[in-house]
Length: 247
Ligand code: PEP
Image (cartoon, rainbow, N blue to C red; front, side, top):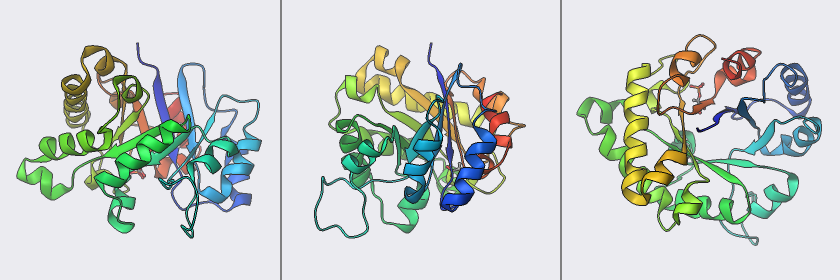
Protein backbone atom coordinates (compact mmCIF):
# COMPACT_ATOMS: atom_id res chain seq x y z
CA UNK A 1 0.00 0.00 0.00
CA UNK A 2 1.54 3.30 -1.08
CA UNK A 3 1.40 6.16 1.41
CA UNK A 4 -0.05 9.33 -0.11
CA UNK A 5 2.21 12.34 -0.43
CA UNK A 6 0.99 15.91 -0.71
CA UNK A 7 3.58 18.59 -1.42
CA UNK A 8 3.00 22.32 -1.54
CA UNK A 9 5.02 24.17 -4.17
CA UNK A 10 5.21 27.73 -2.89
CA UNK A 11 6.99 28.84 -6.10
CA UNK A 12 8.47 32.37 -5.79
CA UNK A 13 6.14 33.43 -2.99
CA UNK A 14 6.57 34.40 0.66
CA UNK A 15 9.36 36.44 2.20
CA UNK A 16 11.03 34.83 5.24
CA UNK A 17 8.65 36.68 7.57
CA UNK A 18 5.60 35.68 5.53
CA UNK A 19 6.89 32.10 5.40
CA UNK A 20 6.93 31.96 9.20
CA UNK A 21 3.32 33.17 9.27
CA UNK A 22 2.21 30.55 6.76
CA UNK A 23 4.00 27.75 8.59
CA UNK A 24 2.51 28.85 11.92
CA UNK A 25 -0.97 28.87 10.37
CA UNK A 26 -0.67 25.44 8.71
CA UNK A 27 1.56 23.27 10.84
CA UNK A 28 -1.01 22.12 13.39
CA UNK A 29 -3.79 21.81 10.85
CA UNK A 30 -2.30 19.13 8.59
CA UNK A 31 -2.66 15.45 9.39
CA UNK A 32 0.75 13.84 8.99
CA UNK A 33 -0.28 10.40 10.28
CA UNK A 34 -1.74 9.16 7.04
CA UNK A 35 -0.08 11.40 4.47
CA UNK A 36 3.51 12.51 3.88
CA UNK A 37 3.41 16.30 3.86
CA UNK A 38 6.07 18.52 2.27
CA UNK A 39 6.48 22.30 2.03
CA UNK A 40 8.64 23.13 -1.02
CA UNK A 41 9.78 26.61 -0.17
CA UNK A 42 11.99 29.24 -1.85
CA UNK A 43 15.69 28.68 -1.10
CA UNK A 44 16.00 31.64 1.25
CA UNK A 45 13.24 30.19 3.43
CA UNK A 46 14.70 26.70 3.79
CA UNK A 47 16.67 27.20 7.01
CA UNK A 48 14.01 29.13 8.95
CA UNK A 49 11.24 26.77 7.79
CA UNK A 50 13.27 23.68 8.76
CA UNK A 51 13.68 25.26 12.17
CA UNK A 52 10.01 26.21 12.49
CA UNK A 53 8.93 22.66 11.58
CA UNK A 54 11.13 20.91 14.16
CA UNK A 55 9.02 18.54 16.22
CA UNK A 56 6.48 18.05 13.41
CA UNK A 57 6.43 15.40 10.68
CA UNK A 58 6.23 17.97 7.92
CA UNK A 59 9.23 17.77 5.61
CA UNK A 60 10.89 20.65 3.82
CA UNK A 61 11.52 20.54 0.09
CA UNK A 62 13.56 22.71 -2.26
CA UNK A 63 12.30 23.80 -5.67
CA UNK A 64 15.58 23.32 -7.52
CA UNK A 65 19.20 22.22 -7.14
CA UNK A 66 22.33 22.20 -9.30
CA UNK A 67 23.87 18.92 -10.41
CA UNK A 68 27.51 19.71 -9.57
CA UNK A 69 28.99 19.29 -6.08
CA UNK A 70 30.53 22.77 -5.77
CA UNK A 71 32.49 25.36 -7.72
CA UNK A 72 32.12 28.34 -10.01
CA UNK A 73 28.36 28.22 -10.63
CA UNK A 74 27.22 31.66 -9.52
CA UNK A 75 23.71 31.73 -8.17
CA UNK A 76 23.26 27.99 -7.85
CA UNK A 77 22.69 25.82 -4.77
CA UNK A 78 24.41 22.45 -4.38
CA UNK A 79 22.86 19.17 -3.26
CA UNK A 80 25.19 19.05 -0.23
CA UNK A 81 23.99 22.49 0.87
CA UNK A 82 20.37 21.34 0.72
CA UNK A 83 21.11 18.06 2.47
CA UNK A 84 22.95 19.77 5.31
CA UNK A 85 20.17 22.33 5.68
CA UNK A 86 17.67 19.56 6.37
CA UNK A 87 15.92 19.36 3.00
CA UNK A 88 14.25 16.00 2.33
CA UNK A 89 12.66 16.52 -1.11
CA UNK A 90 13.66 18.46 -4.22
CA UNK A 91 11.29 19.37 -7.05
CA UNK A 92 12.99 18.83 -10.38
CA UNK A 93 11.85 19.44 -13.94
CA UNK A 94 8.87 21.60 -13.05
CA UNK A 95 7.35 22.95 -16.27
CA UNK A 96 8.11 26.52 -15.17
CA UNK A 97 11.79 25.63 -14.90
CA UNK A 98 11.68 23.85 -18.24
CA UNK A 99 10.02 26.87 -19.86
CA UNK A 100 11.85 29.81 -18.24
CA UNK A 101 15.17 28.34 -17.06
CA UNK A 102 16.18 25.92 -19.79
CA UNK A 103 15.67 22.73 -17.77
CA UNK A 104 15.88 19.75 -20.11
CA UNK A 105 15.32 16.01 -19.75
CA UNK A 106 19.11 15.66 -19.57
CA UNK A 107 19.57 18.15 -16.71
CA UNK A 108 16.56 16.64 -14.94
CA UNK A 109 18.28 13.25 -15.08
CA UNK A 110 21.57 14.66 -13.74
CA UNK A 111 19.72 16.38 -10.90
CA UNK A 112 17.67 13.28 -10.00
CA UNK A 113 20.91 11.29 -9.63
CA UNK A 114 22.55 13.95 -7.44
CA UNK A 115 19.49 14.34 -5.24
CA UNK A 116 19.45 10.59 -4.58
CA UNK A 117 23.20 10.54 -3.94
CA UNK A 118 22.57 13.11 -1.22
CA UNK A 119 19.84 11.09 0.47
CA UNK A 120 16.98 13.34 -0.64
CA UNK A 121 13.89 12.45 -2.64
CA UNK A 122 13.39 13.91 -6.11
CA UNK A 123 9.86 14.99 -7.02
CA UNK A 124 10.31 14.65 -10.77
CA UNK A 125 7.72 16.56 -12.79
CA UNK A 126 6.41 15.69 -16.23
CA UNK A 127 3.44 16.87 -18.23
CA UNK A 128 2.18 17.83 -21.66
CA UNK A 129 1.13 21.12 -23.22
CA UNK A 130 -2.42 21.67 -24.42
CA UNK A 131 -1.17 21.47 -28.00
CA UNK A 132 0.37 18.03 -27.40
CA UNK A 133 -2.87 16.84 -25.82
CA UNK A 134 -4.89 18.11 -28.77
CA UNK A 135 -2.54 16.25 -31.12
CA UNK A 136 -3.06 13.07 -29.09
CA UNK A 137 0.66 12.66 -28.37
CA UNK A 138 0.55 13.30 -24.60
CA UNK A 139 1.23 9.72 -23.51
CA UNK A 140 4.18 9.28 -25.85
CA UNK A 141 5.61 12.63 -24.74
CA UNK A 142 5.30 11.81 -21.04
CA UNK A 143 6.73 8.31 -21.51
CA UNK A 144 9.84 9.93 -23.02
CA UNK A 145 10.13 12.49 -20.20
CA UNK A 146 9.91 9.72 -17.59
CA UNK A 147 12.37 7.41 -19.36
CA UNK A 148 14.93 10.22 -19.81
CA UNK A 149 14.51 11.48 -16.25
CA UNK A 150 15.16 8.03 -14.79
CA UNK A 151 17.89 6.98 -17.24
CA UNK A 152 20.70 5.06 -15.56
CA UNK A 153 18.89 4.54 -12.25
CA UNK A 154 18.66 1.10 -10.67
CA UNK A 155 15.26 -0.26 -9.64
CA UNK A 156 16.14 0.43 -6.02
CA UNK A 157 16.91 4.05 -6.83
CA UNK A 158 13.83 4.49 -9.03
CA UNK A 159 11.60 3.30 -6.19
CA UNK A 160 12.68 6.31 -4.13
CA UNK A 161 11.64 8.85 -6.78
CA UNK A 162 8.26 10.58 -6.61
CA UNK A 163 6.86 11.40 -10.04
CA UNK A 164 4.49 14.36 -10.40
CA UNK A 165 2.23 14.37 -13.43
CA UNK A 166 1.39 18.00 -14.11
CA UNK A 167 -0.39 18.82 -17.37
CA UNK A 168 0.91 22.28 -18.24
CA UNK A 169 -2.56 23.47 -19.30
CA UNK A 170 -3.81 22.81 -15.76
CA UNK A 171 -1.05 24.57 -13.80
CA UNK A 172 -2.20 27.82 -12.22
CA UNK A 173 -5.09 28.08 -14.65
CA UNK A 174 -7.91 26.88 -12.43
CA UNK A 175 -8.49 24.16 -15.08
CA UNK A 176 -8.05 20.77 -13.41
CA UNK A 177 -7.67 17.57 -15.38
CA UNK A 178 -10.69 15.38 -14.71
CA UNK A 179 -9.93 12.54 -12.35
CA UNK A 180 -10.23 10.17 -15.34
CA UNK A 181 -7.74 12.17 -17.43
CA UNK A 182 -5.30 12.33 -14.52
CA UNK A 183 -5.73 8.64 -13.74
CA UNK A 184 -5.18 7.66 -17.38
CA UNK A 185 -1.78 9.38 -17.49
CA UNK A 186 -0.71 8.26 -14.01
CA UNK A 187 -1.55 4.67 -15.02
CA UNK A 188 0.49 5.14 -18.21
CA UNK A 189 3.43 6.39 -16.13
CA UNK A 190 3.16 3.33 -13.88
CA UNK A 191 3.15 1.18 -17.03
CA UNK A 192 6.45 2.75 -18.21
CA UNK A 193 7.95 2.04 -14.80
CA UNK A 194 6.79 -1.55 -15.09
CA UNK A 195 8.39 -1.89 -18.53
CA UNK A 196 11.66 -0.38 -17.25
CA UNK A 197 11.90 -1.99 -13.83
CA UNK A 198 9.23 -4.67 -13.38
CA UNK A 199 6.16 -5.14 -11.20
CA UNK A 200 7.62 -4.43 -7.78
CA UNK A 201 9.04 -1.01 -8.65
CA UNK A 202 5.82 -0.07 -10.48
CA UNK A 203 3.84 -1.05 -7.40
CA UNK A 204 6.01 0.94 -5.00
CA UNK A 205 6.76 4.19 -6.85
CA UNK A 206 4.53 7.12 -5.95
CA UNK A 207 2.88 9.24 -8.63
CA UNK A 208 1.28 12.57 -7.80
CA UNK A 209 -1.11 14.67 -9.81
CA UNK A 210 -0.60 18.44 -9.97
CA UNK A 211 -2.58 21.17 -11.69
CA UNK A 212 -5.12 23.36 -9.89
CA UNK A 213 -5.67 20.86 -7.07
CA UNK A 214 -7.93 22.45 -4.45
CA UNK A 215 -9.95 21.62 -1.37
CA UNK A 216 -12.91 20.57 -3.49
CA UNK A 217 -11.31 18.27 -6.06
CA UNK A 218 -8.52 16.65 -3.98
CA UNK A 219 -10.58 13.78 -2.56
CA UNK A 220 -11.81 12.63 -5.97
CA UNK A 221 -8.37 12.88 -7.58
CA UNK A 222 -6.56 11.14 -4.72
CA UNK A 223 -9.10 8.31 -4.70
CA UNK A 224 -7.95 7.17 -8.14
CA UNK A 225 -6.02 3.92 -8.19
CA UNK A 226 -2.78 5.32 -9.60
CA UNK A 227 -2.77 8.78 -7.99
CA UNK A 228 -0.77 8.82 -4.78
CA UNK A 229 -1.30 12.43 -3.75
CA UNK A 230 -0.66 15.84 -5.22
CA UNK A 231 1.78 18.61 -5.99
CA UNK A 232 -0.10 21.77 -5.12
CA UNK A 233 0.81 25.30 -6.20
CA UNK A 234 -1.63 28.15 -5.55
CA UNK A 235 -3.65 26.40 -2.87
CA UNK A 236 -0.52 25.56 -0.84
CA UNK A 237 -0.26 29.22 0.18
CA UNK A 238 -3.59 29.18 1.98
CA UNK A 239 -5.42 27.41 4.78
CA UNK A 240 -7.00 25.35 1.98
CA UNK A 241 -3.77 23.33 1.84
CA UNK A 242 -4.77 21.67 5.14
CA UNK A 243 -8.10 20.70 3.58
CA UNK A 244 -6.24 19.09 0.66
CA UNK A 245 -3.89 17.16 2.95
CA UNK A 246 -6.78 16.05 5.18
CA UNK A 247 -8.96 15.17 2.18
C1 PEP B 1 2.47 23.57 -9.40
O1 PEP B 1 3.03 24.62 -9.24
O2 PEP B 1 3.14 22.54 -9.40
C2 PEP B 1 1.01 23.55 -9.56
C3 PEP B 1 0.42 22.42 -9.80
O3 PEP B 1 0.36 24.75 -9.44
P1 PEP B 1 -1.22 24.98 -9.26
O4 PEP B 1 -1.68 24.04 -8.17
O5 PEP B 1 -1.37 26.41 -8.85
O6 PEP B 1 -1.89 24.68 -10.56
